Length: 196
Ligand code: HEM
Image (tube, rainbow, N blue to C red; front, side, top):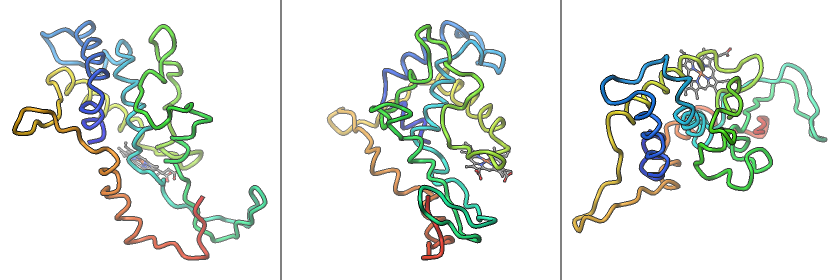
């Protein structure tokens, strides 16, 4: 859903992606998994969608096994710790001052190749030992879905009665997500719990 919204909000990105698909795949067949390595811009869009609007913005909660100390804070054993993936994904010291912008080019080098194929380019799959074990399934599914949608159609905003485009409100959307609902329903933060 965030991908569709990004394509509507950033038509120049959609156009560049469709140009890449036209050159690599052409019109006579659908994109395939073997095309992926020749479609760096599509892969950059995938990385950027998951960075810009992480599907799990606060990660999953973990419990602290033993007392820990970080930056002068004591995090007592048993505390609930939730990594703030959203904040890391939007950290200007990592992604520069335009971190809030949807800009797939940030994942590409000057030759328009992926800067780092071995890295997701975001922190939306979590970290370390408990990093999302399904991330390769997710990446492959998202890649083929995004490539096929962009190959098959143009995504444009709805038009009003006068034919003017109605630009979707991106900041209005993110507070209606399922994840925020789950957090407030099942994980009310208490004073014993720690939010990182
Ligand atoms: C865009 C899609 C997805 C996102 C953003 C996502 C994100 C995450 C995150 C943030 C975690 C917690 C990591 C941590 O605790 O640090 C996680 C864990 C996990 N994910 Fe995903 N996930 C996605 C898709 C999937 C898929 C498709 C599968 C299964 C095929 C999957 C299976 C799992 C499992 C089993 C864990 C628990 C791993 C563990 O605790 O060792 N995820 N995921």
